[in-house]
Image (cartoon, rainbow, N blue to C red; front, side, top):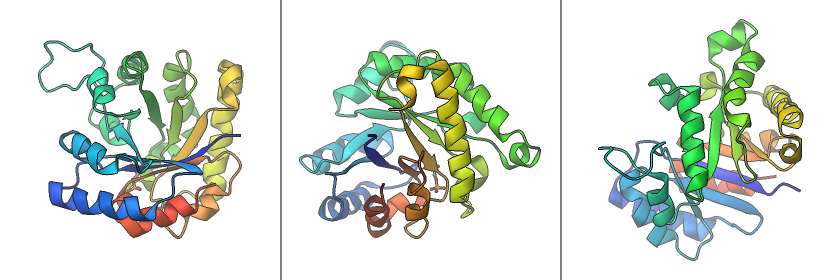
Length: 244
Ligand code: PGA
């Protein structure tokens, strides 16, 4: 039985006061008993959120980490530092980072550093609209997974986020999402049979309060990675309530 999970990716949004209000509202409105509820603020606010969320059951994820050990890497944040301030997870390979040049092998190296530090990576994969329209969606996602599957570990999550559905209001239908999730699980069954059944697969891309339940009802969708709607406490709480 896979425990469901709803993770909020706050991207590069927020301010101290906005985040204080958001976490306070979430603490009062989300139930964390049946579902892992995770928020991922920008680095400067991680400690603030950690303090505000203490005792609520809301977990913390970084949005990225360095592939390197702590050392002379100006501007980088080590996985060990995220663990040190209370993160349990880290989002890696988000399409916004891949579009900025992050490669499959960099994502794999960051995932290794994260595991080494005791973090559980949320590994993002997904195709562009062009790739979907040319019939290459499964091949693209499979190629991204090839780079990650060798070192996949228990506790890692995979987030399928079709690039064309991120921040566009365009959601994959539950059928489209399930189709890819079942491809991903079949891929895991082939390459990491011991992990295939237990690895949690999240869907991301314009998940909203009104479409979450239908997406989460699908067999291989274990929860969501939520961007825009995670910045509104009411919407995020409604998505958590819809968790499988
Ligand atoms: P969105 O973002 O929910 O705003 O589409 C999802 C994501 O980027 O993780």
